[in-house]
Length: 94
Image (cartoon, rainbow, N blue to C red):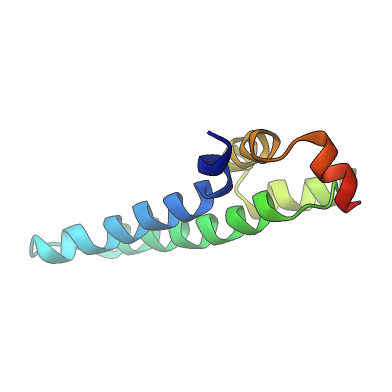
């Protein structure tokens, strides 16, 4: 589970790519699919950065991440970060 938590951002990016590819292959598509797929790819990239950023961060830094990561995914990535690294690993980095 610890290794999976480190790569949850990449998984979100791959789901975003699937949202972009599947409608194209089915002959459909539209702006909604493009917007959702793009948002998931960008969110996955930022989430991967957040989860693998070993700095603890303060209130202001976490508030900025909440805004950047669209609030709900922030909590998913936050708990993935907690699962991926022990407090000792984070403390060793800081």
